[in-house]
Image 1 (cartoon, rainbow, N blue to C red):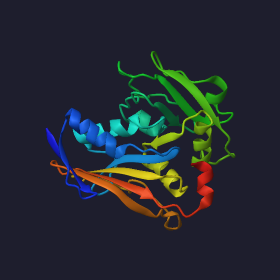
Image 2: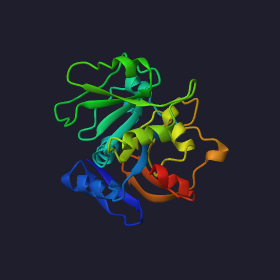
Image 3: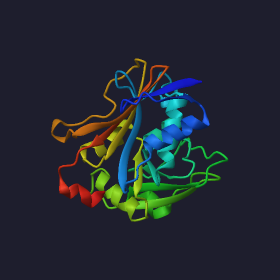
Image 4: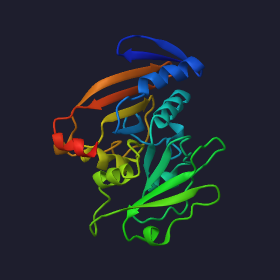
Length: 254
């Protein structure tokens, strides 16, 4: 059991994880009553590493972090992740939300997607450029997982734009989007100014890191305010930052 305490707002309410009370406690704090939204949910070491000693986030995470991850995913319509993360991590499909994988090449060869027995939706969206091999020929992910291609218009040589990805997902009725990275995809979404809330877990460890969790240009730095913070007895902190909007044009993509 691990004790989880709410520091901000300064209620100092606490629960023991795992427990039914803790599941309710966490779900209440991470539920959003507004839609559409875009969340960024990631874990980092204190020095900004996105992965632990084994090269994945598995060695950074904790039981509490996984419980929070589940609550955030349960509140979402779709979980968005980059193809590199799917190849590197043993990626478990969300229980109820769809998984959408962003890939410029359209190839997920070597993926480590895991559809466990309690997964409600085994359909994976492949977000790729229009006219790519995946768009033309489709994608096969193996037994038990259905792939659906989501083609996105993109200029030659350009990356898939976050705004175009969001538009394509929302055209399919997916209003509540959670981006789980990796770092490159997270940077693109942050710099595009499309993140409404940042959910960041900080693990109490120092890991090898050559770059920040997500790089942000000085002219793309978002204005944020603290929406909440939890800490646990193992030294992990769980921070929520809410983006402050000053550009009415953003409403067109949210």
